[in-house]
Length: 242
Ligand code: F6R
Image 1 (tube, rainbow, N blue to C red):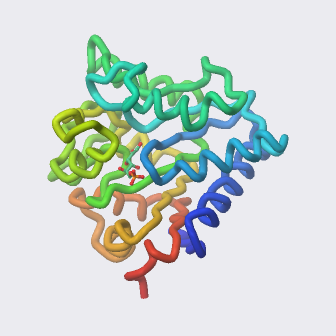
Image 2 (cartoon, rainbow, N blue to C red):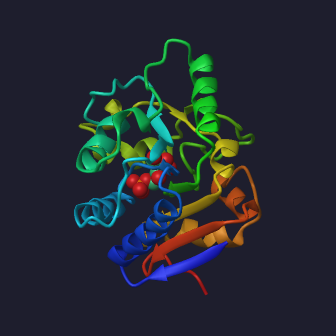
């Protein structure tokens, strides 16, 4: 695992987009794995900025998002579909047919999840996966548990994740209790992984991620088994590191 500490969140975002730019320049038809949540927002703004400057071209890029709330229609303002279009896709030149986000309302969940993994495999696999991390150590919505799932699957969110995500909803009762998420194998199959974290609220989990044993109770710890992971954090998230 490579660790890179930036002075502030903007520096982290710029470094993340440097790595994304390298990937796209090296392979214009690359496959990017994308995340939602607060953390990647500055990264997406920086991607939009470089697109407008003519430095980045998404015309051949394919994307796969990590997750979506179960039960939310793609037009729902709290859905991750809505988030991705509002915060990134509508501002860049990525063709709509190359954007993939798990469907929150599949008819046959099992079949849909297999189909999502198959689409990733058929696209040639993810070249660069962007990740955030939950304060409980989840990646995607792979929550701490006795067992983790390999492929894309329906998951029950933990109470702490429901609370952490309540800030985006009118009330905690409106937060979906389940989500469709890429599994651990799906994520760990990416050729390169960037995990972003910023702010004091992530300092403890970053310390644990780097120092604890590899355990299903801290799903992000499995990233330490991957040959090309870069953890990009700001000073505040690095607060408890030696
Ligand atoms: C989002 C995702 C989650 C978030 C994590 C951190 O697609 O997969 O794992 O990355 O919950 O969320 P923020 O960035 O809001 O702290």
